[in-house]
Length: 413
Image 1 (cartoon, rainbow, N blue to C red):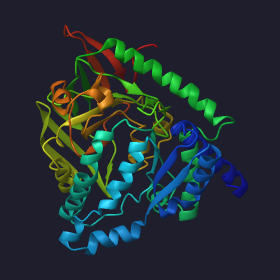
Image 2: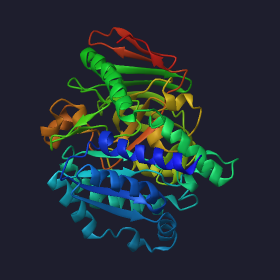
Image 3: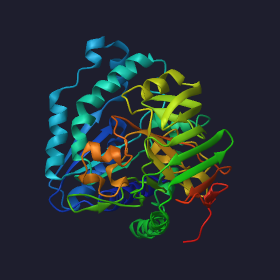
Image 4: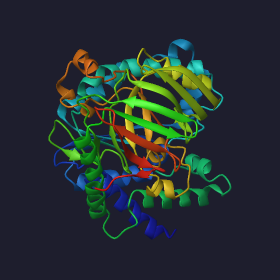
């Protein structure tokens, strides 16, 4: 790619993240999480943010090789040590209603070969230190997740190419999936979110009691809360800002009922779990909880995830994505949940978003659970959809209506 053209597209991408993904407001501060390889893009985001009136842009950097060294050699006590200042930093931003950007561009094989017990111990300590205390700030302020084409990720996606060529190719695919390679990306996103909202509104009007999934290796019924709220395209926050939290996004989603999943489901794409790939796995559910796990690769790591807390083995999200989504039609396996989840219908283990149940944001934990919402330290999406999947919506009187056939929407909006 011509360097000048790449620079132009990178600037447009940064503008989409700031204007559409975050909808950054004048005088807001911006907290960023990124790895060192993301630096060229973060500099563009920083420029775009200040031009949009940002008060302050603050980046918390991670060096992946150093993190792997930590996971390899730190003693057991050090694996669970999370400095207090990290929690304080997050709380300061959330209390002020500031914006947050997370860049997900990690090496899919970063923790390959690391003892799953060490990964689970470190992950649980971080979740308990940060996620638990911070859940009270859910929906407090606008946030967004995006990605950059790092060398290690590009090498995984396009292993037959020299790394520089692979990185260029991955950037091209990111620009395409994120609607950057069009004359007016911001307007393209307005049209796209409007289309997603039509499917979201249809499902909210239907308010099905359950969804039944049928595909090779999958025969699963997931019950839905009576007061379900289908979401998608954009989200609104307590600080008054509405934005598009995932760039890219192709999904509409809601919370399942935590006690109402029965049957078996088989993954359609690998899961990148904290730098470890979980491949060809199946989960069996009874009364909402996993009772059996099988995996060709990474089974021990997946088991550790489901044992993270008492509700990590229950579902927290059901999301519908047509197989005709641009990411699916690219034919590329990205090994990155942000992209792969927008190529296929998916479900998530663990925590349910409060916004997925009507008035859920204002409920106590007990009230949320009574409505069917799941509370957990984890929230892990994995892909189950394909061109072979059929999904039925089940009404209160037991009638079945087609929602998806052969991976595509089966109704008109």
